[in-house]
Picture 1: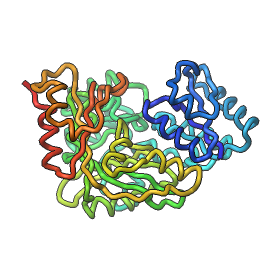
Picture 2 (picture 1 turned 90 degrees about the vertical axis):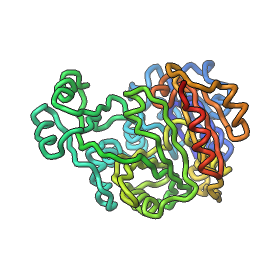
Picture 3 (picture 1 turned 180 degrees about the vertical axis):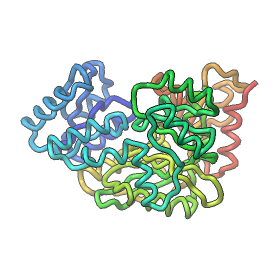
Picture 4 (picture 1 turned 30 degrees about the vertical axis):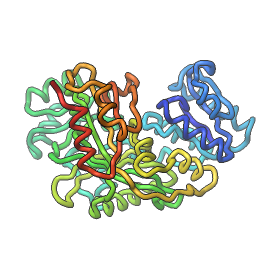
Length: 386
């Protein structure tokens, strides 16, 4: 199989997807705008061939790159980046080269938050009241129905970028004065804990792997208020969340893809659909999959594409947690003290690239334990301020 992979060097750990594709017998054909000699050695080793373009946003250059690969290797079997930013570009290329996967006619329901609501409702999930607004008058008409606070976010945004909580008319006026020139959805603010249903589905939509995570707060609060964040995986999934998550996977027609579906938990067994992402969860969560279950999710995905069989059996042995720290905060316990006290629990320490630091902190500690009390203890120790 010939697999085109966009930006194989980013995020840094994702070269492992390419390495396992190559090990499974696929031709891994990378496209990016980074000079070849500036790619990390492990990225270069994971690729069969690399095509450098001047600008990844120049669609014609991407078409020429895929045309070259088709001429050299034959029919392109798959194309992906596992990165939300490139979803629409990937869909166009799949259209033009007749590649299996999400096409342009389906991209709206997985990119536009307003259209996601239709699929959530079809799965039986409650959603926040809201709609796309273009003017202050349209926003005020909506707020007359929902009341303050509301959340304003790009209808086709990535993560919490340019997302705002509006508490009053003054906030609303300031938002429209500085609003980016893209469609925005405004919706009622939902009070609840954020949780996710995450995993990997095969070509027929069956779940190959699934789990769930609970978050200390939303990414909007983390970014806008410069907070540190923590989130951890569950060993046992709440039955209501798992049942709803499975229905959402069917409603969104997830096939041969990772998924990251976010909910607000507003009460016992009560969930409100937030948004869906047809990609792995962000940050280092794929590594957390592995640490929580002692598996290799990179290998499973690669085998699923190249061989049609993920060859994955797993149990959730541990809660795996990510706890970040921000450089500007004054923490009580230093890095060496954390390692000395909890080094047997910590499985990875990461220096977060700047583009991710607003959401994931400047440094992240990944640790695991079968005991939730231990996870809470370590998180508290890492986050304790002076």
